[in-house]
Image 1 (cartoon, rainbow, N blue to C red):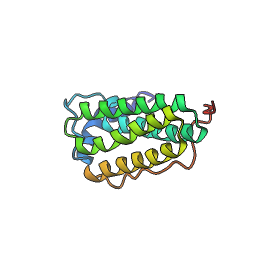
Image 2: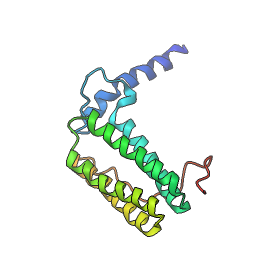
Image 3: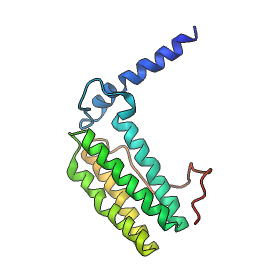
Image 4: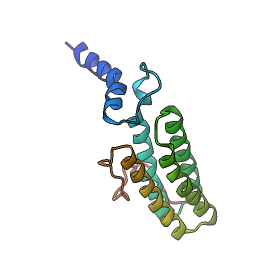
Length: 154
């Protein structure tokens, strides 16, 4: 009897790539046997967590950590765009400039530049979602942080 929930979970994880491909037109994985951990939804969930962290880090003015997380976010977008060849690359490019500005804000320790760049990053995310026909996924400035176990103060 205990095997049924485990089997159901395994089956649902195996079907996740196919379900993601049906829901999002550009989220077609390159291989039908793609593991569930690489679905676009999972990559985007990781990106969403970094987005939240960037907001918390910027509020705390921890410039070294801001630069680090912005670089990680840039890598995550690169992975998504390289792995899912049918993503609208022009729209993913909308986040490249704000990410560079976030890193510039970190290097200059410029909070006002950080706020503008973060707003642009958020708008870029939403533009890409619109282009990908998933405009119902709206990103906003976080109201709270799930990272209560991490101190963002420098």
